[in-house]
Image (cartoon, rainbow, N blue to C red; front, side, top):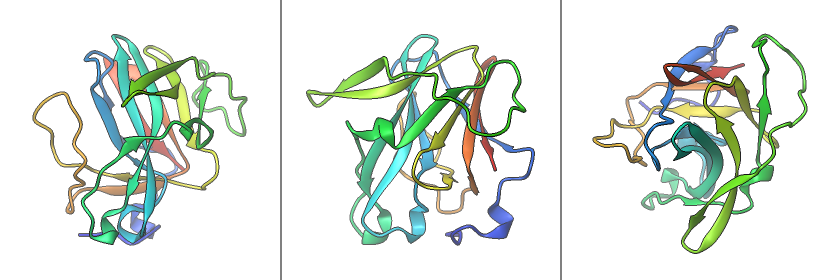
Length: 183
């Protein structure tokens, strides 16, 4: 089932919806099922948000770029060294109901080395309430990926999996870091 772009049944409810969790325990474990473009209707370049555990208790948000499946080419994503301007990471403080634009108070003090290139990212410390939103597009698109067998990532979207869209994702901690897609 390949969902239509912005289908009304796929809109995130007003209060948000739980879309999964990201481990802050295993280094290099990542979640990469939030796309900046609708996966099934995009032809050509596509960006997605990768939330990667870079140290125990510390996640980082990066942008990965690749070629959409609609081109018929196999999907391969690589970290985008210029991706920090594509997403904004913000600290929500202790009130998750704060509305409106928030200052981008989380700098990009972290990064990873990928194929000899330093890729800057936004720090997402465990036990904080944070928000990640796109800087230049109105929505994030959540495409459920196939189940993985280890702590590494999988690039394959489950064609029968859940699809939701919303404007931002909130991260918080309840035993582990949760991801909640918001409108």
